[in-house]
Image (cartoon, rainbow, N blue to C red; front, side):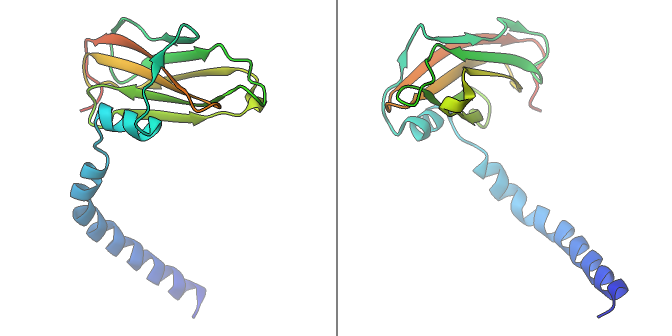
Length: 153
């Protein structure tokens, strides 16, 4: 097969895939991306309870003018040694279609348990930081955010 023929067939296959696949998978993809806050929390913790702790510092604005770009900063007071470190930081929101916004996995090599990002909020709701520790415990910090302009749709 010549190179020109190969690219012709490849282009035809791409067009067929682009026109058939989205119509078939939109409903399934929309359902697959829907997860409630409780289900997301249970999936992370395996059903264990997460306790609040003063060592988790969650910083989000009380009022966000634009829900499409809400800044979130999480810092955890942890020695980050091989014996005692933060394994993961998860960001959950209470009212988006998909409550699970971000999962960041850490190692002692990170040196500091800190994360800064921006999340989308479709309205006024709670933002939670769920922290997985190396000893199997989970910590949580939650703060409410009032959104004046929604960011998800």
